[in-house]
Length: 343
Image 1 (cartoon, rainbow, N blue to C red):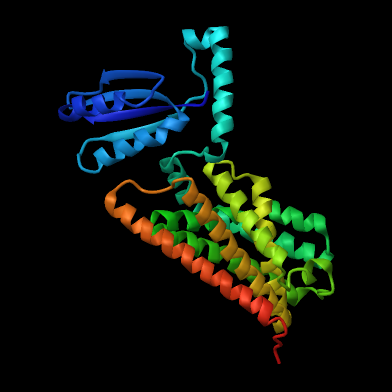
Image 2 (image 1 turned 90 degrees about the vertical axis):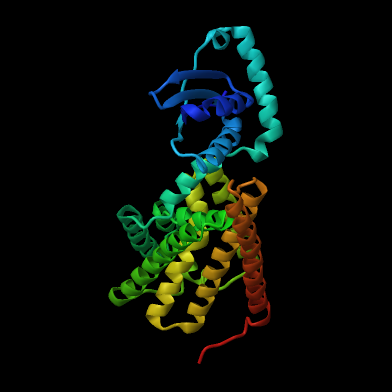
């Protein structure tokens, strides 16, 4: 059983009404204590599936009344008489497994937890910049050596999943400030990779007739499916706060190598190849964003406050339409302009 603890600090004059509402929500345990002369403390132990609904209510109340504070604490272990009863435990476990089988496709962390996670990944930090720099160096060397192992190693290092998925999440919430931060962080990562690849062309006699390079200078229909799958994997992992290295590799497959190929092409002045790599990078980013926006929409990610809901509804619709138009345009370029040459 996955449990979390909600601590709500409630002003005395609003305690009775809020307490009555909170008790209506399903919970495992419920404690009340006096925090101070002005506030009461309510601790609610609930299943993870029930967390978001309670937090949404507390957020709506906190928005209009001063003095409210809410904390969400993960619970590692919970022991009580019922949990120590072997027969009850086996029954609960069986029922839980059946419920999880029915709800597997909808399991996710609460919107509030996800927002904190996404905000962290949308920031341009020294750690992010260094990891992008190192992954670009390793990836470019993998292209030079035409080594699959080295390129895969660079994908493991590259933290490209965070800001790209954060951009889609911000679009769903209609949070344009967060969207701007995430988009700038993503562009910074792309820019660093391209610059590193250009610089390496100045110091190494790079052979462009390699599998690693040639495969990233053209776009095929399979690249669309790869990018869509990468976006889906990244967004689902984010929903469950499990965006680890394996998912990072999946997204990096679609983002890191094409950026390296683009930088190498620019460094050598190979504009037709640069065009192909740029097209591949653009297709991948748009498809990842489209996939993430759809996944987040289907799982019910939305703000609570009315103004934010209205803004998010507009933002979500516009973001899907925008990305679909971009993908449609790119498809047209791919199928109708494959013979474009640069003089």
